[in-house]
Image (cartoon, rainbow, N blue to C red; front, side):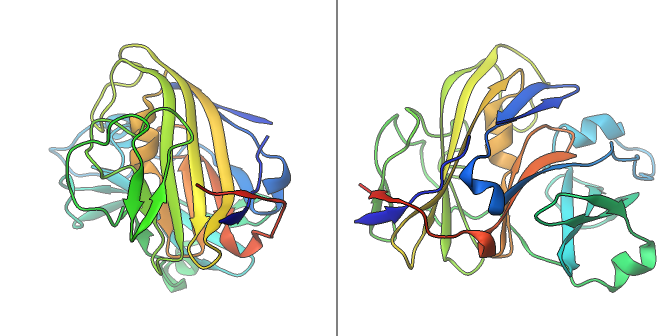
Length: 268
């Protein structure tokens, strides 16, 4: 089966609290952009509540992005939840931003501009039955297609939850794998706990093309890779996001409408 592969290769993003996460952008610059936002101002969370910095570092259990439609890019906000995994109530950071693509230019938007914009769906569905973790290098079978991890290990500590991310319309599948060492990990781990260092891999397949169309990789140090996989998300079916820190203000944003055919390779 033939594939179109976009290779990535040159950007280093540093998380202030939880180490550093790198990503390389080469031929994929037309599709993917590294976004750097100012640090989020705390949301006005009524007591009793967790400290705002703790809320951010346990994303998405207690906090998450909110994305909305914007001509030429996307709007982004950040919210805290009153209780973990419960949609309401929501407490928003006063900061809201418009991100222009593919330049990555960031500017603040007003509350009225934010309120009038149509929301995007946040999609973290693997489309896999909940079950035990996949053993290293074992193949993944999804809708009859067989996939093998580019790294030697699938995500750990979440069963099959974070192995894959499937877009809202089912057209794109992002598969996660890694190598290295994770001494802490898990959604609620303290940042930097234990030794966390290695390489992550994200391979995005197009179901219609039956092949690989986008490949991300990067080095992580200090930040548990399980947190990165857990926070990664599709924004409806158009955008894919991979976080570059746990403070939610640095991430790679890929616009799938900008993915173009490149050299082909073999998908096994």
